Length: 257
Image 1: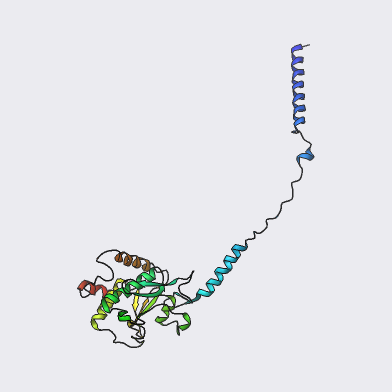
Image 2 (image 1 turned 45 degrees about the vertical axis):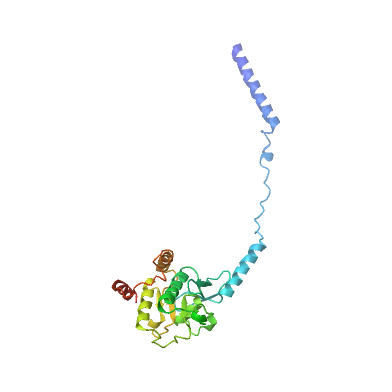
């Protein structure tokens, strides 16, 4: 009989029994039924209630109905029902140096059209002198547009201005001298042809200057940025009175005619 082996075996059995008792007292050796207790049923997600958000969306839809028409003017820009309202793209802007203001599409369109008006004022014929009425017109309500295919419909999208409405009747030529026409051509060259003079349309309208590119044309932002930089640089921009008869400028004007 090996006493040492028996003692060792008894000690191992005793230790095993002790561990089992300890685990049972802590609940680790729980009954299978307790370990597999069913979880509480899942509650389906409920849609969030946000009355403030709903009201905001409803207000935005109503505002859009009041402002936007969903219909383009002749150059593809959307005509808008109102100017100078929150959420709209058309606002009245001052034309620096003239004492006048005009309602136009804000941003790049504004930069280009206002540049044209300012140069016209300084170099072709001063606008608004001695309290001249109706020297400049911009946006008009779409309801006043009789044919959205005509270039003057671009006023309703804020992408056209009219110099002295009524003084240069549609369909009539001869309102400008040769020298004035030369200056106008130089002004249009500043815009790289993005602005078209109504005198060049099949049905002339010499007082009309309208955007000749559609929304999204990358040239518009580039030209507008350049014109803005000119206004901030002495010796450039409107009011500098360049020599438009200079051969290089005449060639430039001819390229953009």
